Length: 105
Image 1 (cartoon, rainbow, N blue to C red):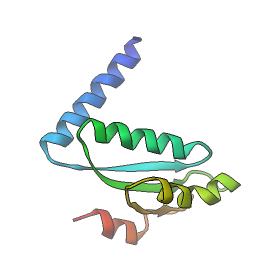
Image 2 (tube, rainbow, N blue to C red):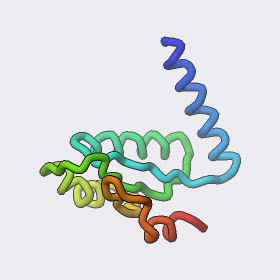
Image 3 (cartoon, one colour):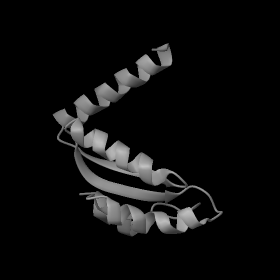
């Protein structure tokens, strides 16, 4: 492993340990682009296998441009994943109040 990979692995383990110790739920922010379905499914499966509680995910439009993938990712993720979509963030806009209300106690 490269020094960078070792550091990333250490930080991931430290974050996981802290999340478990504080009984925190994971909220995954997903960049809405081609390939995000696979990345999201793998990331949430890995987090679940590591014992993290998963609250859900937020789909984040990372570009003003649109494509077929970007237009259909939300429906595909909802159909494929057992986790809740907590909302959609539009490109260049602040976190919507509806998402804040869903994720903050």
